[in-house]
Length: 216
Image 1 (cartoon, rainbow, N blue to C red):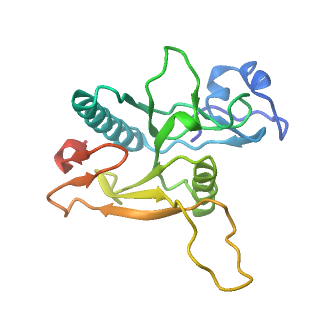
Image 2 (tube, rainbow, N blue to C red):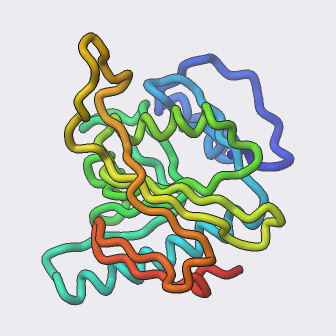
């Protein structure tokens, strides 16, 4: 999700987190590290930002309502926050558009093990192969829920929202056939503005969102 007007410099194919921190913020903020490999992000139009803000706001509201009845649980909705893979190190991370993670101490790194939901707002610049690769990384890290959002063609709102849940076991396959990945997401819910009842889903906490709340 590259920032408009900022020219990409020539960088090595692989970098460490420490090397990334030495770059100017406007450059470093455009980069994810996938096992140390430099991956440039793409940012969509302004409507892309509005969509992720609206969704994060509603997820924060639902998380707060869950905590009011279950004070032992604490979740935080957030946007464009690095999610680090593994228990240590910072040279392998992705930056979802929006996410929900456990409440952490101020300034703490968000690890995949802290994260229960990640989401991406798709933009015209996103290719299917890019999104599949990113979704596969989320699944391999064991993040239980992945949300995918389509904007309307005229960019006037959210056109569809799909919720995927991490498969707990594997389906039976023909003899000699093995899945390409050890973990996969299964589509568990899909909504469009035509669904007047809005979005309703029970995981990772009860989520009830009316479509007007996502208008921008």
